[in-house]
Image 1 (cartoon, rainbow, N blue to C red):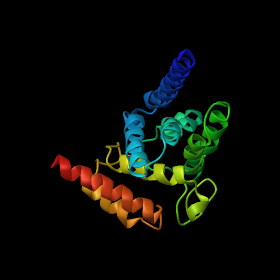
Image 2 (spheres, rainbow, N blue to C red):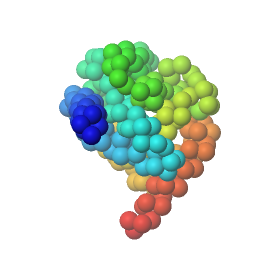
Image 3 (tube, rainbow, N blue to C red):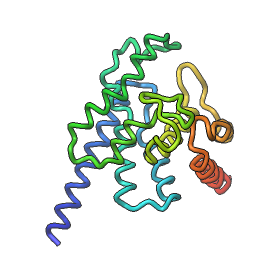
Length: 202
């Protein structure tokens, strides 16, 4: 019992520390306040819908906390630029994936699923994503799941350059990207899950 309690305390400490890292990035990037907790919550709903084990679910959540941690290395002139990025600036912004992987590799207690979220959440089903241009199931399952959560929250959140989309409009856009940006099977599950939840709230 003492060993179990110690393990639970250690896990809780890791959970809190990883969440704080995600929240710290939000302080620097003022546009995304609340993003870390929102995408983590979305990811947990998807994990439940997919009947993931507790350990898989925890790893997905930890990856959600850390998914954009590499943006710490992005210069303010790019990260905080209010307008559109040019080609050179986009390349710099995209480097946050590699920077994030470098960062999380030092956290040797992280499960593989958490690393997959950091590595693959900007890949696209049709191979047009980054950093590796992976296609279809070359992209990790965790990366494919989390991409849906990340994009949905980006669409439904206000930014200096856009208004927040409604949930309905965002889900229509995501459904339209099935087989292009997103895994078509997971897209169906995600859209149905959030549409059903919206229906219950109505």
